[in-house]
Length: 222
Image (cartoon, rainbow, N blue to C red; front, top):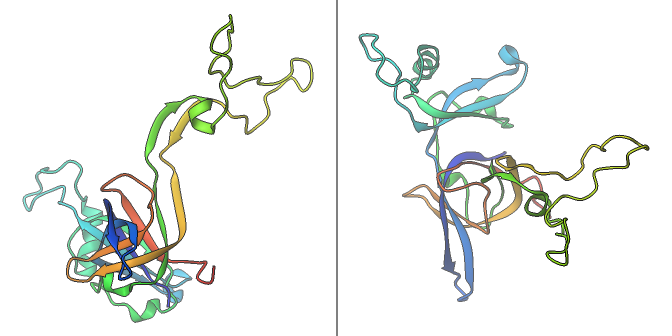
């Protein structure tokens, strides 16, 4: 059975193992998630489970007045009402082998994982803004004195006559970070069932409060 859950990144800390060794860990608020839709081969052509995470307010009140401009709209609210759940901020889909065993409104908590499990963590990395080639790609700078006019430029862009163009993939200044990143084969060090916390060894992508998708690793034997 494949396991997966949505979590929020709390931050990093360190703990001590039973042998006294220090382990850096990332604390994740994992769930509780709720099943908002179960997809079947008959209706959708494949089996999957759609889960929702984190509460979100409704856009309109009972009288139809706008109260939260960025809240859940009527179509989304109808989807959650059909599942018998409250409105959720995040909705993601997981392909489980036993998707048919899940029911609408069922909760998925951090206790699906145990200490020693290996997981893959996916999140949107920290955004760095517009950066030059030195920071973005680790390129070397030019001489900083003796009349040099070349300091932090990205270097030659290409010959003039042949090929008369800039090749694709040329390292140039641009937007850095804020992309989907997956770190594989991370170890779950500790599980706090009461508070739905996962302590994962090492670093996890994204800033604090970022949405993180935790899945059973595809490199279990690595």
